[in-house]
Length: 297
Image (cartoon, rainbow, N blue to C red; front, side, top):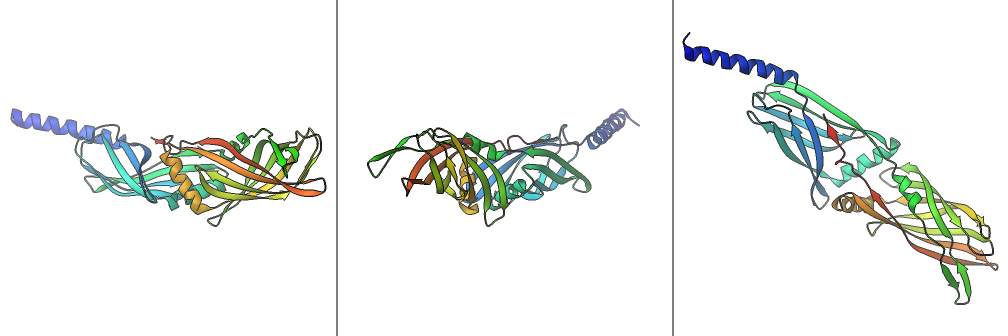
């Protein structure tokens, strides 16, 4: 064997050793973030780092991102060139899938697995299955505890001044959750600054997210709020999936930050008559980091 042949043999041996090392240590790191939004479609940008330059052309097929076992994004095929180490791919998903995943996440008590899986094929032939997952834990309803409103003076019939009930937060849990409606059961903690009791007999509530009306509420159980004291009214709120979908779109467009607003009309018995006491613009802010926090390795 001549010098040229020896050099080729050494290069081939080194390449073979490196190819074996690459295959044995093939654990791609994948992260994802939101991309462009058009209509009901949202781009999800996947960034894949192979860890080492690829010694061979390869393809990655059937990449699927799941939230609570619901496929929310899929990529059919990605081609990775010789010596490539990083690749960026964009997948388009529909907001309906995001809502389906969100509903499944709620049904899992907001403790779900986020999984990304796929098949890598070396030389487009030899398959290698990979699956990475992480836990996503949220406590979305805890934000409702931040909905607070100080009492304000409201005049009934232009004559009788009444302090509106002060709101000390809503302590809530999920009820029935489906595509038809997402139910929230909550206790509204109220403070009565008046020097007479406030018997709350009924209420109507409207819930807004990013100025989109996403739900309405009604009373389950009223209460008599003592003068200068506290009381609790139990309510039922139903979120409408279609408007909620639009609010999620704005949530993503705002960098996963949303403004939540509640308007409430309390019905109270005062001097033997039922009167309506409006309490409006009760606000809080919700922040999430659904995709930005995901990193698979």
